[in-house]
Length: 205
Image 1 (tube, one colour):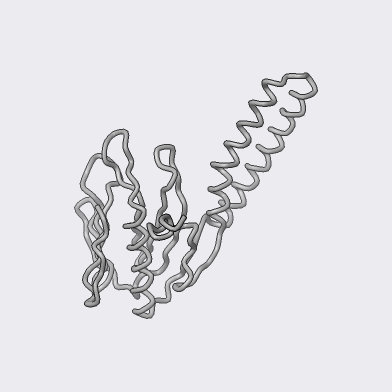
Image 2: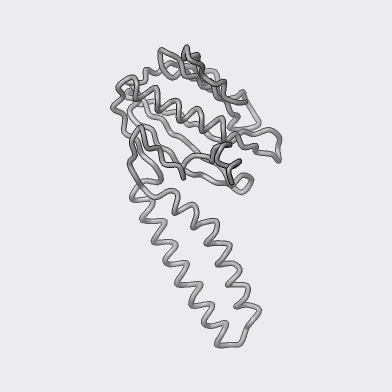
């Protein structure tokens, strides 16, 4: 399930993924006429100028940390979601980072070329993000209090456990919060943190 790259004649660009083990793949295609999609027996074609908004976000799960999502809204109220991973087996969620990135970048390019006035949003909503920060603050205060009590009681094992847990928590949750900071972006400046790293960039590291 990969992208078919567009050539100089602007051939259709395709992307597909399976949202679950049951059912067919969600299929998308960028054509000269617009964004074509086929999901669970339903299909449609959205003109690029009819796309009201695109929201990019970072959505890791336990089985796949490098997981990204694009929510695309139509001016008539429709919504489709595109994920950067696909289910292969009951225990395997495979990444499709490069294909997803290429498709999303090309979608923005075609929308811009069509004169789209869509709202481009990155990260979580402001209220959700504020709630997440508040929850993190409460958890941080609680962990600090537990750490101080462990030190006062000379519970070194417990203190070390809290330090290790805090580091792991900060690595996983901190990355989610940092990447998903609410933002607006333009067609020429897609937020790189909300897209999988490109193969070219990985090869340069």
